[in-house]
Length: 171
Image (cartoon, rainbow, N blue to C red; front, side, top):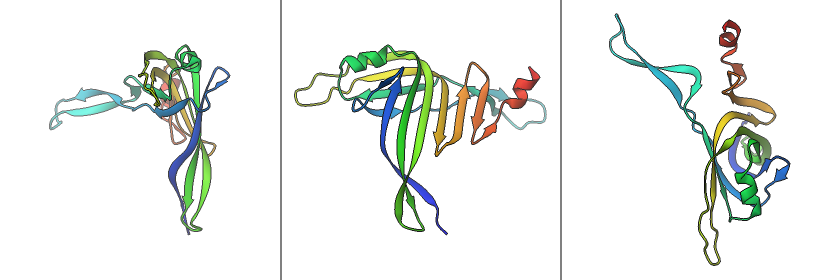
């Protein structure tokens, strides 16, 4: 009996406000999720404990790298709201030793926090970047939602489990 191993992201594209940035983006650094914590210490506890506040995270950023500056780059800089990254993940089927492909979609909402123009280089890439502050992130793999965070609507779902459902029902 085999299983599937995700091996490489075969390819991806970025989309925003009806624009398809084909061949323009080269890499996307996805957000790092760091829980906000509170130090717990009290009677009967042998020291301090850093307790994560469920569903509360520090600043989330994406960094999108481009090949060079151009009109589309500046269009991306002006984007507010939703940006979607759609990719095809190559997966190895260990039973058949063949490759298959699984779709991955990363949907984000936010606004531009900073942008770098990169450099002008004869015969080379300028590698400009756009950093966006993210308030919403959803990741779907093979049609299944594996992560969804919506800071403004108190939604935090991880691997299909709504981890703040009870909290929302009580406030």
